[in-house]
Length: 97
Image 1 (cartoon, rainbow, N blue to C red):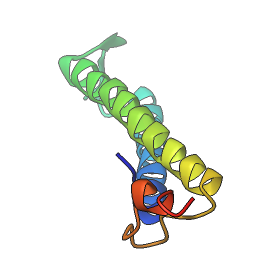
Image 2 (cartoon, rainbow, N blue to C red):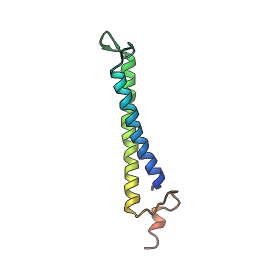
Image 3 (cartoon, rainbow, N blue to C red):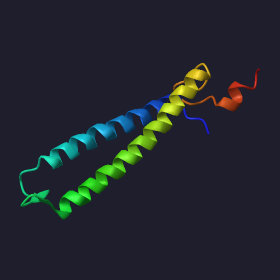
Image 4 (spheres, one colour):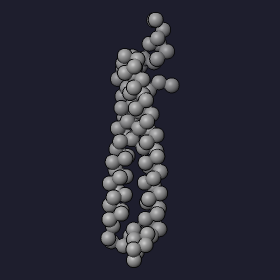
């Protein structure tokens, strides 16, 4: 399978955005003083559920970003054969060699 350059950059940006958003959320969750995340200094169910969501999102963001990074590297290695719209594939790009 070959990703277009545009799709690869999108996946890479999505992975980075996911990390940014969830790191910010966990930081705010940790500092929560409203009583949702901590009650008498102990973590609540709200805290554990949202921490689990954040960890899962970190994992998905990392995997998606890694796919995007591999796609960007492959498109650079191929000399940009895929182009921005993904119309040309690796198989057709190498057919003239």
